[in-house]
Amino acid sequence: MSEPKKLYIKTYGCQMNVYDSERMAETLGGKGYVETQSPDDADMILLNTCHIREKAAEKVYSELGRFKGLKAEKPDLKIGVAGCVAQAEGEEIMRRQPLVDLVVGPQSYHRLPEMEAKTRDGAKALDTDFPEEDKFEKLKNRPKAKRGPTAFLTVQEGCDKFCAFCVVPYTRGAEVSRPADRILSEARDLVERGVREITLLGQNVNAYHGAGSNGDMTLAGLIWELNKVDGLERIRFTTSHPNDMADDLIEAHGTCEKLMPYLHLPVQSGSDKILKRMNRSHTAESYLRLIERIRAARPDIMMSGDFIVGFPEETEEDFQATLDLVEEVKYGYAYSFKYSTRPGTPAAERPQVDPKAADDRLQRLQALITRHQREIQDSMVGRKVRVLFEKNGRLPGQMVGKSEYLHSVHVSDAEVEVGELRDVLITASGANSLAGALV
Ligand code: SAH
Ligand code: SF4
Ligand code: F3S
Image (cartoon, rainbow, N blue to C red):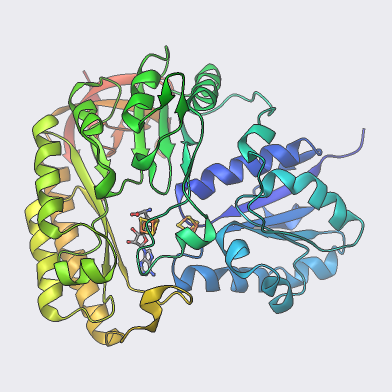
């Protein structure tokens, strides 16, 4: 038998890309590829890219440039670009960087085997279609390898919201939900292979409305079905839009045992003027009332969010409203970004904020978020949390896992296996993690 060919995949962007990279590795596995952790011994390099901010896209081109030497040494090396930059720029990538052999969009990667064959014949391969066939169905027959205790599972893709700053509706296309039975069988398969926690993924995951046995199913309905899967211990989902937080989903946070008390619910800004210009179709007030209802259902829920500062026409007063909102919600985690102009989106045409002012606002927002994050993490000391152990720590005998609130927890001299769930008493709060002892 010949040596297996080696595949190196580098993943950028959101969890959806992490999921897609796994699927791409499995499809190419069917063509005899095994994954390698180093580009140097690869026969094929795939960059699974993100287009969300300008910097993310530029990184791809600088990374591609670095493969020049490698390709000169190994003319048989194939280089591919997948993901959202592939979708947004298509053929332009090959023009800008001729060493690229293959460009595949996020909806077409089930066609990778044929595309790979084409590149082996010396041709270039490009596919950025939104095909009729279901890529997930085409990917079904994958190897049953053992897995770690946590996994992502895509249930919904694309977005119809068209926030004025965002490329996702263009790169991922219209909102589509996968049928519930396929998701459930994928979940059962993951559990058989060792998975204990599943994070349901979608750009707008709470807009999920996949075909179920009695008509369309909501995300809450799907979560309740997953709750019945033996061996599955934890359910999470991301990312949600405030407008799609249905009553049954809020309620599930209070009543569904396996659903974790953590919710990523991006608001982007605390100013109604800016929210309107962002086309978010919710206000700061409606968002705050929503969180009140969620906290009434599940008082200890950990909130997380996303923010954009320096959106076109944002004034100091608008920014102050964002700080006020953050002060009121107190996020356990939050991600904040400086507005980045994305060509083709409506906001790109509007008067831009002075970059220095935007930098300054970003720093102030991040300082406030970090303070809350720290306070919430520190408040865990003395509490008992339940930890799903995911891996060995750096010190001998140390094990690391995640609490229900997604805090990293380290335990020394722990007599536990990866994949075990145990109660832990938190004894200390460090820079980015908690430490504790088994109880
Ligand atoms: N579907 C999710 C998030 C998509 S992108 C949602 O609706 O919330 C992840 C985050 O990137 C967004 O929440 C937003 O905060 C940020 N983002 C998106 N486009 C951006 C842009 N042009 N500039 C800066 N940040 C952006
Ligand atoms: Fe982008 Fe808005 Fe859709 Fe989120 S809801 S993916 S920010 S357009
Ligand atoms: Fe980036 Fe595409 Fe995800 S643009 S954030 S990889 S959907």
